[in-house]
Length: 503
Image (cartoon, rainbow, N blue to C red; front, side, top):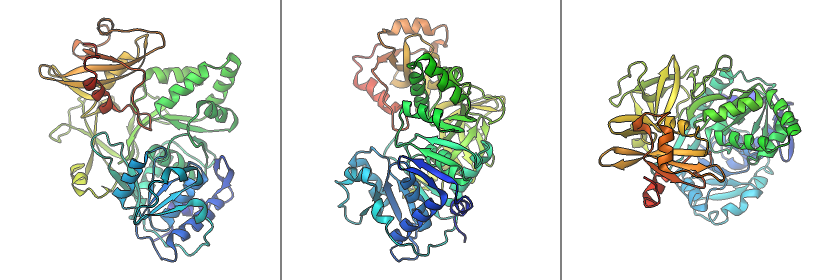
């Protein structure tokens, strides 16, 4: 056994800046020292936590990283909780993992007031933990469980995705090589820290190599633009909705301010978009503003990242590139056979970064794998060696009048309509058609649209069977915390408001 790689690497960068947050600038040696205090407090004289689940509700910043590293260094399994969750959700995560400890910071103490008295749960503040004197810490083998992250739960209750220290190291090393990270990089975090995107792609990759991670407590478009101008950033990663909001903030600025924002954004070496499909219109507008063609990639909680457009070389809009190093990817049909070239199929993945299990759900774990390959539930097509995501097999791949169609393809076409701001396409069960194509749209301010007008317009862009036959006008689309549209909720809106849906 040996010291965990992320810790041993940090020792090589002691004097370098690791984290910048609202409390100031913090070096790697400070992070190591604080995490040893917290780890010792969690151990309480014991030799090893032996994979006890330690949950934490801590704002992004030095404290968050300190707690995560401390749990790992003490031999526990880290369970980062989503800030903003209602008490019922927090109670579910705590009960499902059988967490023995809940760590909170002063900003989140009020959020846990109704649950901190639960039996078997020791709720303790971060401020208390860092005051504990350090003790010798155990050596942790890489095959041990390290973290449990919860899926979005689009069907049923969320499942806890368990990754080992080896899984996490593989995910990090894959990305630092593919995207050419170095210790000179400086990245801004404005993503929530209960998903792979923020935890692995941003924070962990930065700290793996001695780079600097600036951490905002939450996303705010003006603040992000201020950091792009004033912080000498080299990298930025976000979800599509963040880029949309940054574009809106840029467009609302004066001409002089726009020029300054664009100039500084152009100086970054890499900008990445992920966690949801990036509309081509957003990619094009961002390129007009900053000169950057956003790097799109594909991944999920269970596998980390699997596919990526190249850091060097052409990036094709609407695609997610090729398999990353060490990741094997195949497309299969419903029987599990590889599909013919040019045909759509389910993405299945194998590699060292693939998760170990769904926590406490052996049957769900077995069902998620076939002969050692993880079944993602996403459908894609390969064109000239490059993958294009068609959508979730059970949500975005619609079956209508004998055809399989991609909801994402229809959405991409609808976004070109001059009065449509946002849209989500779902399938509504229909005895005659199998599924009817239903479009929920958000219109630009002061605009109007009816189904017949939309259908006439769409005939020039979509095959007849892909044209929506149901239309619902909304003020906004329902989204989860990562900005993904929650399509089961959209589908439910059509069902609940059938009398209001046009068609």
